[in-house]
Length: 171
Image (cartoon, rainbow, N blue to C red; front, side, top):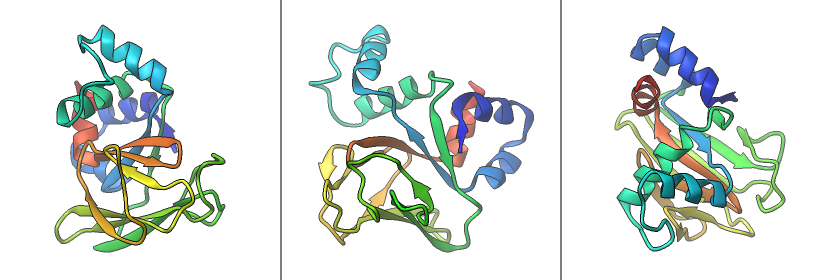
């Protein structure tokens, strides 16, 4: 795992192709605590982050998140054409989230390289998995898109394609 500052430094020194190859096809950016995001969003011109929904709120939250240099970014190894990554508290998970609201084996993210898409499946976790604020049905596959907000229990992340992250960090 790296933080936003380290990734910004890498993005400034590497070509897009090399940067994306190094961090994998997508990343999960850990979201700061909700009150901090709301305060930043209000300073950026939002009327209210509570009443707003949809892509505009998600885009603003993502922009806010990338202003925090110390935020943790879960980068993943280069993946084969189809690969799955486990999310949970167990040390054997690909993404370990040390949060009591996260189940031992909470969810699975899959990368579909032929179509450059990802899916997410909640593995029957106790506190659920959310995608853009919607609780996912256990064991059902959902598509994840660039900029989507994913919540495992109480742990919030933004899903970003590597190309999108590189572009945003270079701004």
